[in-house]
Image (cartoon, rainbow, N blue to C red; front, side, top):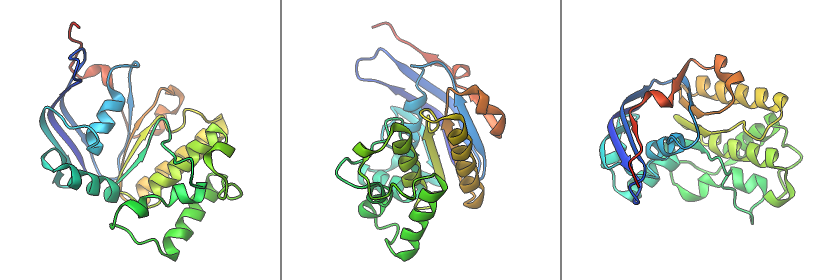
Length: 223
């Protein structure tokens, strides 16, 4: 489902270079990414999602070579097949929680905003303890509630690839467990691939596989 081969990326200032010789995640597999801050874990997710473009190498998602697509086609693939839980949530302040969850339907024709989609959004929200918060805007929600809204938005279109950047980072232990349950349940039900960046080592035993990002060949170039 996710296949990276000889992927190289550097930021414009040249101070940081990332090289991933190989990384594969199968359909239905739940994989955690760990490693020190600043080693490129978020950059990896952005590369897979097509938000960032590699200098060289191949990124294939569900049979599509993402790294060969034009920007407009990468956006379409991302909106239709990838659910991304951003570390900073990336919620729109002027929309309610319900509208934020359903926002993917506004930006792609890959799904139809019908009664089934609205029911799915409501069910996801209820499973995250947000049933009574759906008409509130992000400013009226706690950080943990905002994070759960972001998770529901990532799952509402039933993506084949789920990318999660510290999806449980702002949650208490009970909510962490419930959110991980939901992520795993959706991964299995949709035969999706889950790639999750986390610093919470207490959760790692629940994943099928853990990749230590320090094991990749990473180079920091002199500034």
